[in-house]
Length: 281
Image (tube, rainbow, N blue to C red; front, side, top):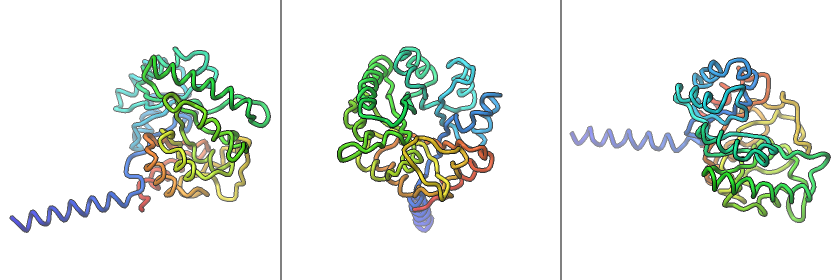
């Protein structure tokens, strides 16, 4: 009996040690934009495809012709959830009530904006208006719906400003009670920033993350744009994903979503999932 107890204890310890070696022990979520073409044709079938990959956590940035209630029903039927709801900047600002109600119906705890409309280089005046708008949006979503507002960086915000960038300005000037952030690691790396350094610097301000990788040999800039073919399977590009994921865990990131904008998702998404599953410390 004593031998069996010791053996069981050893096996439990071994399993714990094995789990600790995994850099990313949980299942990732998925951004609906990855499957935008499929969703536009058949929402239910696309959800089935995603669930078959072992993914049940979604970030939707489009209702794909459904009402929020209809989409929620499809998710519930499959044991899936929508944790984050992405909307445009104008809708977040001018249709906050509708956005909040849709997010609540979907079951989302976060509302996310991924682009600040602008012409030419992003400027300090643009950043100042953004701060005021984000504080307003975030306060209303929090007070009226209990939802956290997040801004998803897109690269152009890293224009130099004082000792840092305009992204630093936005983070530092927005109210942490009402405004959080979703780090897109490609759109952090592409403009020449270090995702690990930003995660270490701003910690819990980052609640969400887009997992992406940038094709080797591609040189970035501050445009906020690159051909979709430059999205490659995780672990095959330029980004040190193990270091990013460790820093993200330390920062307290709550949801991680695979986003692959390329036309090669049938092969790349399974490859990315396998990479995350097998990534060891």
